Amino acid sequence: MDNHKLDAIILKITQNIHTDADISSLRQILSEYKNEALTQLGKYNVNIGNGKDIHIGDHTYYSWDDNAIQALVRAIREVSWQCVAILTENDYTQSTGIGLIDKLAKQFTDFSQQSVMRYGLKLAFSPNCGEYFVSAAYQVIKCWQTNKQKLLEEHPVPNPLDIFTSVAISPNAKLIASCTQYQIQIWQLNKEKSLYTFDKTWFSNFFDVFGFDSVTFSPDGKILAANDNQNIKLWNMETGKEVATLSGHSDKVTCIAFSPGNGRILASCSYDKTIKLSDIETKRCLGTLKDHRDSIYTLAFSPNGEILASGSNDNTIRFWNLNTGEMPKTLRHHFDGVTCLVFHPNGKSLFSGSNDKAIAEWTIEGEILSVFPEQIEQIFNRIEQKQQTLEDIEVLRHSLLAGDRQIAKQLGKYNVNIEQGQDIHIGDRQYYTWNEKALKALINLIQFGDVDEGNVLVTQLNNARLYGEEGDR
Image (cartoon, rainbow, N blue to C red; front, side, top):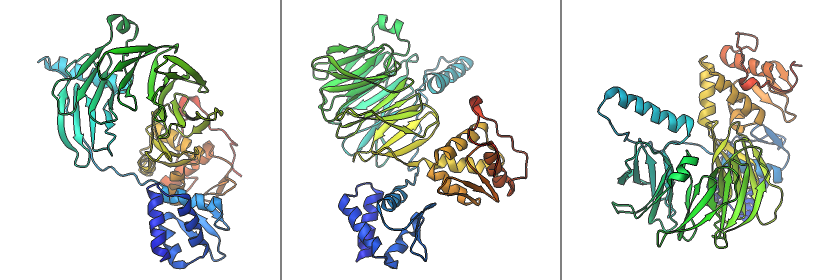
Protein backbone atom coordinates (compact mmCIF):
# COMPACT_ATOMS: atom_id res chain seq x y z
CA MET A 1 0.00 0.00 0.00
CA ASP A 2 2.87 2.32 0.91
CA ASN A 3 4.46 1.66 -2.49
CA HIS A 4 1.38 2.90 -4.35
CA LYS A 5 1.12 5.88 -2.03
CA LEU A 6 4.80 6.68 -2.54
CA ASP A 7 4.37 6.43 -6.32
CA ALA A 8 1.48 8.90 -6.17
CA ILE A 9 3.45 11.35 -4.04
CA ILE A 10 6.50 11.13 -6.30
CA LEU A 11 4.30 11.76 -9.33
CA LYS A 12 2.89 14.89 -7.68
CA ILE A 13 6.42 16.10 -6.85
CA THR A 14 7.59 15.61 -10.44
CA GLN A 15 4.62 17.72 -11.58
CA ASN A 16 5.29 20.27 -8.81
CA ILE A 17 1.71 19.98 -7.47
CA HIS A 18 2.52 18.31 -4.13
CA THR A 19 1.06 19.62 -0.88
CA ASP A 20 2.33 19.88 2.71
CA ALA A 21 0.22 16.80 3.50
CA ASP A 22 2.04 14.89 0.76
CA ILE A 23 5.41 15.83 2.26
CA SER A 24 4.25 14.70 5.72
CA SER A 25 3.14 11.36 4.28
CA LEU A 26 6.44 11.02 2.42
CA ARG A 27 8.39 11.62 5.63
CA GLN A 28 6.31 8.99 7.46
CA ILE A 29 6.81 6.37 4.75
CA LEU A 30 10.56 6.95 4.61
CA SER A 31 10.97 7.02 8.37
CA GLU A 32 9.47 3.53 8.62
CA TYR A 33 12.41 2.31 6.50
CA LYS A 34 10.70 -0.24 4.30
CA ASN A 35 13.10 -1.58 1.68
CA GLU A 36 10.34 -2.02 -0.86
CA ALA A 37 9.52 1.68 -0.71
CA LEU A 38 13.10 2.92 -0.55
CA THR A 39 14.20 0.98 -3.64
CA GLN A 40 11.90 3.25 -5.67
CA LEU A 41 14.18 6.17 -4.82
CA GLY A 42 17.28 4.65 -6.40
CA LYS A 43 16.53 6.28 -9.74
CA TYR A 44 16.89 9.68 -8.01
CA ASN A 45 20.41 8.90 -6.78
CA VAL A 46 19.22 8.15 -3.23
CA ASN A 47 20.88 5.39 -1.19
CA ILE A 48 20.58 4.22 2.41
CA GLY A 49 23.88 3.08 3.98
CA ASN A 50 24.28 0.14 6.33
CA GLY A 51 24.39 2.56 9.23
CA LYS A 52 21.09 4.00 7.98
CA ASP A 53 22.90 7.10 6.70
CA ILE A 54 20.93 8.72 3.86
CA HIS A 55 22.92 9.59 0.75
CA ILE A 56 21.16 11.99 -1.64
CA GLY A 57 23.37 13.04 -4.52
CA ASP A 58 26.72 13.99 -2.98
CA HIS A 59 25.28 14.86 0.44
CA THR A 60 24.80 12.68 3.53
CA TYR A 61 21.99 13.00 6.08
CA TYR A 62 21.40 11.10 9.31
CA SER A 63 17.61 11.27 9.48
CA TRP A 64 14.65 12.30 7.35
CA ASP A 65 14.72 15.85 8.72
CA ASP A 66 13.62 18.94 6.79
CA ASN A 67 16.97 19.26 5.01
CA ALA A 68 16.90 15.64 3.84
CA ILE A 69 13.29 15.87 2.66
CA GLN A 70 14.03 19.11 0.77
CA ALA A 71 17.07 17.50 -0.87
CA LEU A 72 14.94 14.52 -1.91
CA VAL A 73 12.25 16.77 -3.40
CA ARG A 74 14.92 18.62 -5.39
CA ALA A 75 16.33 15.33 -6.68
CA ILE A 76 12.88 14.12 -7.76
CA ARG A 77 11.95 17.47 -9.27
CA GLU A 78 15.12 17.70 -11.33
CA VAL A 79 13.91 18.39 -14.86
CA SER A 80 14.63 15.92 -17.63
CA TRP A 81 14.65 18.25 -20.63
CA GLN A 82 13.46 16.78 -23.89
CA CYS A 83 12.72 18.36 -27.25
CA VAL A 84 9.23 17.22 -28.27
CA ALA A 85 8.96 19.08 -31.58
CA ILE A 86 10.87 21.39 -33.90
CA LEU A 87 8.93 23.88 -35.99
CA THR A 88 10.87 25.66 -38.72
CA GLU A 89 9.80 29.09 -39.93
CA ASN A 90 9.87 29.82 -43.66
CA ASP A 91 11.96 32.73 -44.84
CA TYR A 92 9.54 35.44 -45.94
CA THR A 93 12.18 38.05 -46.74
CA GLN A 94 10.97 39.84 -49.87
CA SER A 95 12.96 39.32 -53.04
CA THR A 96 14.27 42.01 -55.37
CA GLY A 97 14.90 39.48 -58.10
CA ILE A 98 18.64 40.19 -57.97
CA GLY A 99 20.42 37.23 -56.42
CA LEU A 100 23.41 39.03 -54.87
CA ILE A 101 21.26 41.80 -53.35
CA ASP A 102 18.76 39.26 -51.98
CA LYS A 103 21.57 37.25 -50.43
CA LEU A 104 23.12 40.31 -48.78
CA ALA A 105 19.72 41.51 -47.56
CA LYS A 106 19.00 38.10 -46.01
CA GLN A 107 22.37 38.08 -44.26
CA PHE A 108 21.82 41.60 -42.94
CA THR A 109 18.32 40.73 -41.67
CA ASP A 110 19.56 37.61 -39.87
CA PHE A 111 22.50 39.47 -38.36
CA SER A 112 20.37 42.38 -37.14
CA GLN A 113 17.78 40.06 -35.56
CA GLN A 114 20.23 37.69 -33.91
CA SER A 115 23.25 39.85 -33.09
CA VAL A 116 22.31 43.50 -32.87
CA MET A 117 18.69 43.76 -31.75
CA ARG A 118 18.51 40.21 -30.36
CA TYR A 119 15.10 39.71 -31.89
CA GLY A 120 14.11 36.45 -33.52
CA LEU A 121 11.19 34.05 -33.46
CA LYS A 122 8.52 35.29 -31.01
CA LEU A 123 6.07 32.89 -29.35
CA ALA A 124 2.97 33.18 -27.16
CA PHE A 125 0.73 30.41 -25.81
CA SER A 126 -3.01 30.79 -25.37
CA PRO A 127 -4.27 30.97 -21.76
CA ASN A 128 -6.71 28.06 -22.18
CA CYS A 129 -4.20 25.35 -21.23
CA GLY A 130 -2.03 26.27 -24.21
CA GLU A 131 -4.53 24.95 -26.75
CA TYR A 132 -2.76 26.93 -29.46
CA PHE A 133 0.23 29.21 -29.81
CA VAL A 134 1.33 31.87 -32.24
CA SER A 135 4.73 32.51 -33.76
CA ALA A 136 5.96 35.70 -35.40
CA ALA A 137 9.03 35.90 -37.63
CA TYR A 138 10.07 36.92 -41.13
CA GLN A 139 7.02 39.11 -41.85
CA VAL A 140 4.38 36.48 -41.06
CA ILE A 141 2.28 35.50 -38.03
CA LYS A 142 1.35 31.84 -37.70
CA CYS A 143 -1.16 30.12 -35.41
CA TRP A 144 -0.38 26.51 -34.44
CA GLN A 145 -2.33 23.77 -32.68
CA THR A 146 -0.12 22.88 -29.72
CA ASN A 147 -0.69 19.16 -29.23
CA LYS A 148 -0.34 18.32 -32.93
CA GLN A 149 2.05 21.14 -33.98
CA LYS A 150 -0.40 21.71 -36.83
CA LEU A 151 -0.50 25.04 -38.67
CA LEU A 152 -3.99 26.50 -38.32
CA GLU A 153 -3.64 29.87 -40.06
CA GLU A 154 -1.13 32.53 -41.00
CA HIS A 155 -1.16 36.30 -41.56
CA PRO A 156 1.49 37.92 -43.77
CA VAL A 157 2.73 41.29 -42.50
CA PRO A 158 4.84 42.52 -45.44
CA ASN A 159 7.40 45.10 -44.39
CA PRO A 160 11.04 44.30 -45.22
CA LEU A 161 12.30 47.15 -43.02
CA ASP A 162 10.45 46.04 -39.88
CA ILE A 163 11.10 43.19 -37.43
CA PHE A 164 8.76 41.36 -35.05
CA THR A 165 9.66 42.23 -31.47
CA SER A 166 6.79 40.82 -29.39
CA VAL A 167 3.55 38.86 -29.60
CA ALA A 168 0.73 38.36 -27.07
CA ILE A 169 -2.63 36.59 -26.77
CA SER A 170 -5.59 38.10 -24.91
CA PRO A 171 -6.90 36.41 -21.71
CA ASN A 172 -10.01 35.15 -23.54
CA ALA A 173 -7.73 33.71 -26.29
CA LYS A 174 -9.68 35.55 -29.04
CA LEU A 175 -7.22 38.35 -29.89
CA ILE A 176 -3.60 38.28 -30.99
CA ALA A 177 -1.35 41.33 -30.69
CA SER A 178 1.71 41.40 -32.93
CA CYS A 179 4.34 44.02 -32.30
CA THR A 180 6.99 45.18 -34.75
CA GLN A 181 9.40 48.04 -34.32
CA TYR A 182 7.06 50.67 -35.71
CA GLN A 183 3.60 49.09 -35.69
CA ILE A 184 1.21 47.06 -33.53
CA GLN A 185 -1.57 45.03 -35.12
CA ILE A 186 -4.50 43.32 -33.39
CA TRP A 187 -5.88 40.19 -35.02
CA GLN A 188 -9.01 38.17 -34.34
CA LEU A 189 -8.68 34.41 -34.50
CA ASN A 190 -9.96 33.01 -37.82
CA LYS A 191 -10.12 36.50 -39.39
CA GLU A 192 -7.95 37.42 -42.37
CA LYS A 193 -7.73 41.18 -41.78
CA SER A 194 -6.37 42.88 -38.69
CA LEU A 195 -8.87 44.45 -36.31
CA TYR A 196 -6.72 47.46 -35.32
CA THR A 197 -3.40 48.94 -36.36
CA PHE A 198 -1.43 51.29 -34.11
CA ASP A 199 1.48 53.12 -35.73
CA LYS A 200 4.29 55.09 -34.18
CA THR A 201 4.49 58.72 -35.27
CA TRP A 202 7.31 59.97 -37.44
CA PHE A 203 8.52 62.11 -34.53
CA SER A 204 8.73 59.16 -32.12
CA ASN A 205 10.40 57.02 -34.80
CA PHE A 206 13.11 59.62 -35.23
CA PHE A 207 14.04 59.53 -31.54
CA ASP A 208 13.51 55.78 -31.00
CA VAL A 209 15.23 53.69 -33.65
CA PHE A 210 14.31 50.44 -31.88
CA GLY A 211 10.58 51.19 -31.69
CA PHE A 212 7.95 49.04 -29.96
CA ASP A 213 9.28 45.84 -28.41
CA SER A 214 6.91 44.83 -25.59
CA VAL A 215 3.15 44.38 -25.73
CA THR A 216 0.67 42.89 -23.23
CA PHE A 217 -3.05 42.66 -22.47
CA SER A 218 -4.60 43.61 -19.13
CA PRO A 219 -6.03 40.63 -17.13
CA ASP A 220 -9.60 41.52 -18.22
CA GLY A 221 -8.49 41.94 -21.85
CA LYS A 222 -9.92 45.46 -22.11
CA ILE A 223 -6.59 47.33 -22.30
CA LEU A 224 -3.52 46.79 -24.46
CA ALA A 225 -0.23 48.26 -23.27
CA ALA A 226 3.01 48.72 -25.20
CA ASN A 227 6.28 50.51 -24.61
CA ASP A 228 7.03 53.58 -26.73
CA ASN A 229 10.60 54.69 -26.11
CA GLN A 230 10.62 56.03 -22.52
CA ASN A 231 6.82 55.95 -22.27
CA ILE A 232 4.01 53.39 -22.19
CA LYS A 233 0.89 53.71 -24.34
CA LEU A 234 -2.53 52.25 -23.50
CA TRP A 235 -5.32 51.41 -25.96
CA ASN A 236 -8.96 50.45 -25.37
CA MET A 237 -9.60 47.09 -27.06
CA GLU A 238 -13.32 47.74 -27.50
CA THR A 239 -12.84 50.99 -29.42
CA GLY A 240 -9.26 50.73 -30.67
CA LYS A 241 -8.59 54.23 -29.32
CA GLU A 242 -5.49 55.33 -27.42
CA VAL A 243 -6.57 56.21 -23.88
CA ALA A 244 -3.39 57.19 -22.03
CA THR A 245 0.38 57.63 -22.04
CA LEU A 246 2.36 56.77 -18.91
CA SER A 247 5.74 58.41 -18.42
CA GLY A 248 8.46 58.54 -15.78
CA HIS A 249 11.40 56.45 -16.99
CA SER A 250 14.54 58.30 -18.01
CA ASP A 251 15.58 55.75 -20.63
CA LYS A 252 13.93 53.25 -22.96
CA VAL A 253 11.29 50.95 -21.47
CA THR A 254 12.18 47.32 -22.23
CA CYS A 255 9.34 45.24 -20.74
CA ILE A 256 5.87 45.72 -19.25
CA ALA A 257 3.62 43.35 -17.27
CA PHE A 258 0.19 43.60 -15.65
CA SER A 259 -0.35 42.26 -12.14
CA PRO A 260 -2.69 39.23 -12.18
CA GLY A 261 -3.89 40.12 -8.69
CA ASN A 262 -4.80 43.71 -9.53
CA GLY A 263 -5.36 44.52 -13.20
CA ARG A 264 -4.92 48.23 -12.54
CA ILE A 265 -1.23 47.76 -11.67
CA LEU A 266 1.24 47.82 -14.55
CA ALA A 267 4.95 47.17 -13.95
CA SER A 268 7.58 48.51 -16.34
CA CYS A 269 11.37 48.18 -16.46
CA SER A 270 13.95 50.14 -18.36
CA TYR A 271 17.52 50.71 -19.39
CA ASP A 272 17.50 53.25 -16.54
CA LYS A 273 17.92 50.28 -14.08
CA THR A 274 14.55 50.88 -12.39
CA ILE A 275 11.12 49.28 -12.20
CA LYS A 276 8.02 51.45 -11.94
CA LEU A 277 4.57 50.40 -10.73
CA SER A 278 1.76 52.45 -12.25
CA ASP A 279 -2.03 52.65 -11.77
CA ILE A 280 -3.53 52.67 -15.26
CA GLU A 281 -6.80 54.25 -14.05
CA THR A 282 -5.33 57.21 -12.17
CA LYS A 283 -2.29 57.35 -14.53
CA ARG A 284 -0.04 57.76 -11.48
CA CYS A 285 3.26 56.10 -10.59
CA LEU A 286 2.78 54.19 -7.32
CA GLY A 287 6.46 53.52 -6.68
CA THR A 288 9.91 52.92 -8.09
CA LEU A 289 11.99 49.82 -7.33
CA LYS A 290 15.77 50.20 -7.43
CA ASP A 291 18.34 47.48 -6.80
CA HIS A 292 19.73 46.26 -10.14
CA ARG A 293 23.13 47.53 -11.22
CA ASP A 294 22.49 47.50 -14.96
CA SER A 295 19.68 47.67 -17.51
CA ILE A 296 16.61 45.57 -16.72
CA TYR A 297 15.36 43.46 -19.61
CA THR A 298 12.40 41.43 -18.38
CA LEU A 299 9.61 41.20 -15.78
CA ALA A 300 7.15 38.52 -14.66
CA PHE A 301 4.46 38.44 -11.97
CA SER A 302 3.72 35.28 -9.99
CA PRO A 303 0.19 33.97 -10.69
CA ASN A 304 -1.12 35.41 -7.39
CA GLY A 305 0.51 38.79 -8.09
CA GLU A 306 2.46 38.83 -4.82
CA ILE A 307 5.94 38.37 -6.31
CA LEU A 308 7.46 40.41 -9.14
CA ALA A 309 10.55 38.88 -10.74
CA SER A 310 12.99 41.01 -12.74
CA GLY A 311 15.95 40.01 -14.91
CA SER A 312 18.85 42.30 -15.70
CA ASN A 313 22.01 42.78 -17.68
CA ASP A 314 23.79 42.55 -14.31
CA ASN A 315 23.26 38.75 -14.74
CA THR A 316 20.90 38.50 -11.74
CA ILE A 317 17.22 37.95 -11.01
CA ARG A 318 15.43 39.84 -8.25
CA PHE A 319 12.33 38.67 -6.37
CA TRP A 320 10.28 41.64 -5.15
CA ASN A 321 7.59 40.92 -2.53
CA LEU A 322 5.09 43.68 -3.28
CA ASN A 323 2.99 43.02 -0.17
CA THR A 324 5.74 43.29 2.45
CA GLY A 325 8.00 45.85 0.81
CA GLU A 326 11.06 43.87 1.89
CA MET A 327 14.41 44.20 0.14
CA PRO A 328 14.41 41.96 -2.93
CA LYS A 329 15.90 38.49 -2.93
CA THR A 330 18.76 38.16 -5.41
CA LEU A 331 19.13 35.00 -7.52
CA ARG A 332 22.51 34.31 -9.11
CA HIS A 333 23.46 31.64 -11.60
CA HIS A 334 23.60 33.12 -15.11
CA PHE A 335 26.83 34.73 -16.28
CA ASP A 336 25.24 36.95 -18.94
CA GLY A 337 22.17 39.16 -19.08
CA VAL A 338 18.84 37.60 -18.05
CA THR A 339 16.42 38.25 -20.92
CA CYS A 340 13.35 36.12 -20.23
CA LEU A 341 11.33 35.11 -17.15
CA VAL A 342 8.15 33.05 -16.79
CA PHE A 343 6.42 31.58 -13.74
CA HIS A 344 4.98 28.09 -13.71
CA PRO A 345 1.15 28.33 -13.63
CA ASN A 346 1.11 26.82 -10.12
CA GLY A 347 3.34 29.66 -8.89
CA LYS A 348 5.87 27.35 -7.23
CA SER A 349 8.73 27.82 -9.67
CA LEU A 350 10.24 30.33 -12.09
CA PHE A 351 12.09 29.70 -15.35
CA SER A 352 14.78 32.09 -16.58
CA GLY A 353 16.51 32.45 -19.93
CA SER A 354 19.77 34.27 -20.53
CA ASN A 355 22.22 35.37 -23.17
CA ASP A 356 24.53 32.71 -21.69
CA LYS A 357 22.31 30.22 -23.63
CA ALA A 358 21.11 28.51 -20.44
CA ILE A 359 17.62 27.97 -19.03
CA ALA A 360 17.32 27.67 -15.25
CA GLU A 361 14.45 26.65 -12.99
CA TRP A 362 14.11 28.24 -9.54
CA THR A 363 11.91 27.65 -6.52
CA ILE A 364 9.79 30.54 -5.26
CA GLU A 365 12.26 30.68 -2.34
CA GLY A 366 15.02 31.48 -4.82
CA GLU A 367 16.82 28.14 -4.83
CA ILE A 368 17.92 26.80 -8.20
CA LEU A 369 16.28 23.49 -9.11
CA SER A 370 17.81 22.64 -12.46
CA VAL A 371 19.60 23.99 -15.49
CA PHE A 372 19.00 22.92 -19.06
CA PRO A 373 21.43 19.96 -19.11
CA GLU A 374 22.07 19.58 -22.82
CA GLN A 375 24.53 22.46 -22.75
CA ILE A 376 26.62 20.89 -19.97
CA GLU A 377 26.53 17.42 -21.50
CA GLN A 378 27.64 18.77 -24.87
CA ILE A 379 30.50 20.70 -23.26
CA PHE A 380 31.80 17.54 -21.57
CA ASN A 381 31.47 15.65 -24.86
CA ARG A 382 33.47 18.32 -26.69
CA ILE A 383 36.15 18.26 -23.98
CA GLU A 384 36.43 14.47 -24.32
CA GLN A 385 36.90 14.92 -28.08
CA LYS A 386 39.40 17.78 -27.53
CA GLN A 387 37.07 20.16 -29.41
CA GLN A 388 36.15 22.54 -26.58
CA THR A 389 35.97 26.29 -27.22
CA LEU A 390 36.89 29.21 -24.99
CA GLU A 391 33.16 29.80 -24.45
CA ASP A 392 32.79 26.17 -23.31
CA ILE A 393 35.53 26.66 -20.71
CA GLU A 394 33.94 29.86 -19.43
CA VAL A 395 30.51 28.20 -19.10
CA LEU A 396 32.11 25.22 -17.34
CA ARG A 397 34.09 27.46 -14.98
CA HIS A 398 31.03 29.50 -14.03
CA SER A 399 28.87 26.42 -13.46
CA LEU A 400 31.54 24.81 -11.28
CA LEU A 401 31.86 27.92 -9.15
CA ALA A 402 28.08 28.16 -8.86
CA GLY A 403 27.84 24.57 -7.61
CA ASP A 404 25.55 23.50 -10.44
CA ARG A 405 24.02 20.10 -9.54
CA GLN A 406 23.89 19.05 -13.20
CA ILE A 407 27.69 19.32 -13.30
CA ALA A 408 28.05 17.39 -10.05
CA LYS A 409 26.47 14.38 -11.76
CA GLN A 410 28.84 14.65 -14.73
CA LEU A 411 31.90 14.91 -12.47
CA GLY A 412 31.20 11.56 -10.82
CA LYS A 413 31.98 9.82 -14.11
CA TYR A 414 35.56 11.13 -13.98
CA ASN A 415 36.41 10.25 -10.37
CA VAL A 416 35.91 13.84 -9.24
CA ASN A 417 34.30 14.38 -5.84
CA ILE A 418 33.33 17.48 -3.90
CA GLU A 419 33.13 17.14 -0.13
CA GLN A 420 30.58 18.97 1.98
CA GLY A 421 33.37 21.31 3.01
CA GLN A 422 33.67 22.10 -0.72
CA ASP A 423 37.12 20.51 -1.02
CA ILE A 424 37.58 19.25 -4.58
CA HIS A 425 39.16 15.83 -5.24
CA ILE A 426 40.38 15.37 -8.82
CA GLY A 427 42.13 12.04 -9.22
CA ASP A 428 44.66 12.00 -6.37
CA ARG A 429 44.78 15.80 -6.09
CA GLN A 430 42.86 18.07 -3.75
CA TYR A 431 41.97 21.74 -4.33
CA TYR A 432 40.33 24.44 -2.27
CA THR A 433 38.32 25.95 -5.11
CA TRP A 434 37.88 25.89 -8.87
CA ASN A 435 41.02 27.89 -9.59
CA GLU A 436 42.93 27.66 -12.83
CA LYS A 437 45.01 24.67 -11.74
CA ALA A 438 41.92 22.74 -10.68
CA LEU A 439 40.22 23.48 -13.98
CA LYS A 440 43.28 22.38 -15.97
CA ALA A 441 43.51 19.20 -13.90
CA LEU A 442 39.86 18.42 -14.60
CA ILE A 443 40.26 18.88 -18.35
CA ASN A 444 43.44 16.80 -18.41
CA LEU A 445 41.67 14.05 -16.46
CA ILE A 446 38.72 14.03 -18.87
CA GLN A 447 40.90 14.02 -21.98
CA PHE A 448 43.89 11.91 -20.93
CA GLY A 449 42.82 10.11 -17.74
CA ASP A 450 45.61 11.81 -15.77
CA VAL A 451 45.72 15.27 -14.20
CA ASP A 452 49.34 15.75 -15.29
CA GLU A 453 49.02 14.66 -18.92
CA GLY A 454 48.39 16.92 -21.90
CA ASN A 455 49.07 20.57 -22.42
CA VAL A 456 45.74 22.35 -21.93
CA LEU A 457 45.76 26.12 -22.01
CA VAL A 458 42.72 27.57 -20.23
CA THR A 459 42.26 31.14 -21.39
CA GLN A 460 40.05 33.33 -19.20
CA LEU A 461 37.47 35.40 -21.06
CA ASN A 462 37.02 39.11 -20.48
CA ASN A 463 40.34 39.23 -18.60
CA ALA A 464 38.63 37.57 -15.62
CA ARG A 465 41.01 35.52 -13.49
CA LEU A 466 39.81 32.54 -11.50
CA TYR A 467 39.67 33.54 -7.89
CA GLY A 468 40.85 31.35 -4.98
CA GLU A 469 44.10 29.81 -3.94
CA GLU A 470 46.38 29.05 -6.87
CA GLY A 471 48.10 26.00 -5.42
CA ASP A 472 46.83 22.54 -4.63
CA ARG A 473 47.33 20.95 -1.29
